[in-house]
Length: 234
Image 1 (cartoon, rainbow, N blue to C red):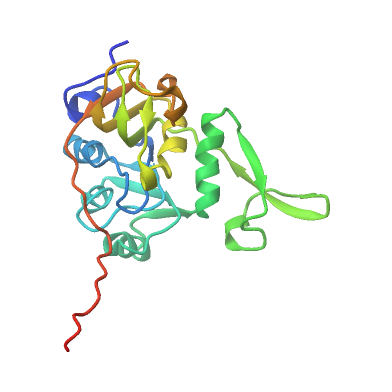
Image 2 (tube, rainbow, N blue to C red):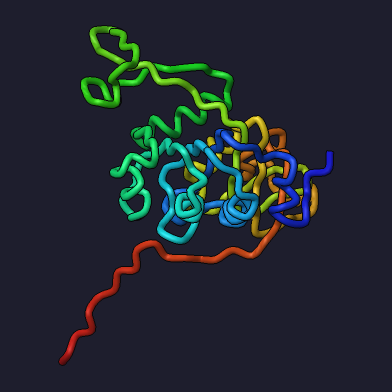
């Protein structure tokens, strides 16, 4: 199977459709599939449901799709850095399904592992549990959460080989591995594609069996929150 494509647009050409569910890797602006997100914006695919820890920031990452009115629903944990996300949610232009971070990650992992649902104590007795099945185990109450199976996964890795084996670097190894496994099709963008056999098998985070398409590209290293100390005057 040919997995390497020249551009993000080519890799997504026959994959996108209106109303699809996309699982996107990344945490804040770290490890986000920015090239694939930009390609989705150019394609104009609309009425999207996106499962992602957050929605980028205004003007970058998934924030671009929000500003372009391509997103119908976000399944997220954190929305604090995106004013447009907040505005659309408060004005009822955007549907939001809030998930605790660990629950969202586990929902993706479960979907990739073929597990339709699992019970967790997180969210019991809160609005998170409203409308969901609850059950007691050993005297403790748990809420049922469903695994996520997406139409498409988009992730960003550090290195890959032609078979699609992925290595993530440091904090970018966050939502990317579970997001990669839960998509019916997974498209990964990487900083470097290395020769087959050059990756130590023990360092591979996502096996290539989960990855269908690859692109290599240049990435922007943005800082989400720049905090500096005021200059001291002697």
